[in-house]
Length: 181
Image (cartoon, rainbow, N blue to C red):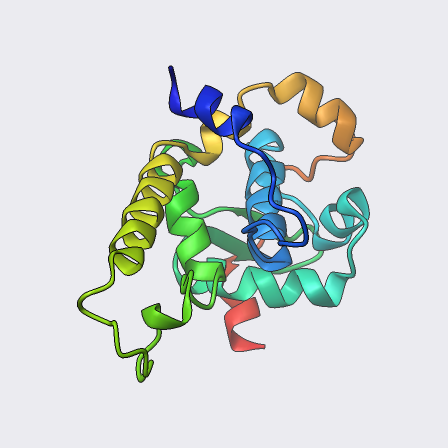
């Protein structure tokens, strides 16, 4: 039985919230996919925000660490925008999530200063660390290119047309204007 099938058969606990990524991680990944399917053109922040129904301010905040760490580049000027900072094949989901999540503490005992008397003897910590390691391993196995593989249908769903794409050869210097903001 595969792990995915085994997970599908597990009963869902009542009253517990599922483990989930923050909005920042979700929209950071979506922004990278948007830029990947819009290559070689530049993507305008306003268009990305509109496509996903989020505010430009929120988008600027989540773009900042992506620019600072080379996943995105910004281009200033009248025909400016954002684009991938490196090939989509080289941007893993794990790299993106590590930049946008504050921590991965699945339980209190993961945090520094936890005062549980069982730390070091409890198998829960080890089981959760193993689960987190498996989660990281799966994320590391996927790239932005994998998510953007259905380029044509994704472009259609995002409302991207050839005329909306900003010419990749537009004048403007690549800068970290968001990092300077």
